[in-house]
Amino acid sequence: MDDSSDRYRPTLERFSGFADEYDRVRPSPPDALAALLGQLTGVARAELVVDLGSGTGLSTRYWAVRADRVIGIEPSADMRSEAVRRTHSPNVAFREGYSNATGLPEHCARAVTCVQSLHWMEPVGTFREAARILIPGGALVSVDYDWPPVSGSWRADAAWKACEDIADRLEESLPGPRPPRWPKPSHRERMQASGWFRSTRELALHHVDEGTAERFIGLLLSQGGVQDLLKAGRSEAELGIDELRAIAGSELGARPRPWYWTARVRVGIT
Image 1 (cartoon, rainbow, N blue to C red):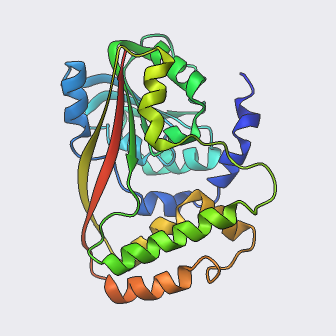
Image 2: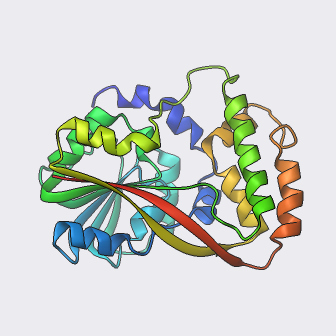
């Protein structure tokens, strides 16, 4: 094993301690993702999908009825334990590992997915490892949702973004090393520059689910930066969450309503 455990320790600490809440509020991958992957790779049902940074297994379980086998690779014991607890499909397994060191054999997977996770992964080693385990003609697929979804209330959406902006500013004041991350908008550019992919593409998919005021607040609380600040002693009032609770409670309420998500999808074909 290389130095991944030391390099990613701040990231692992960031996403520890709230796995149950994370899984409860986060969105699944877009419904159209499997069909898109089948069209790109020429195979309607993948023999094996490897899900890097699989977290609580939300993005891994998506493939349970869409692929023959699925393996989630996740370094966080906390997240991995939650994934095992919630997963009951015999063709889905979870392993400890990193995006640059999966421990899987060469050319074993039809697809490698990174759902809401590629920005936490060092690109050079990640792309090299993805190309190593993908079969020729396989696909690396990164999925990132725009935050927040369209909830049906522009006031609630604006209040959510205001909290996110506050958290981004306050995060700079936290002591200790910050988790390394790479900008999402340039994922495709880095894929192309890596030299491991014959073709790259970026597109948008849309996804609809539903939520309440409670889930809307939960989405904010599932953000790693917000969690770091709360763990460091910052109050919900300082982060604007008290105001968000009031607005979301008034505007969204307890009755589920449709939410509309946009997923930014970046694809590399080996």
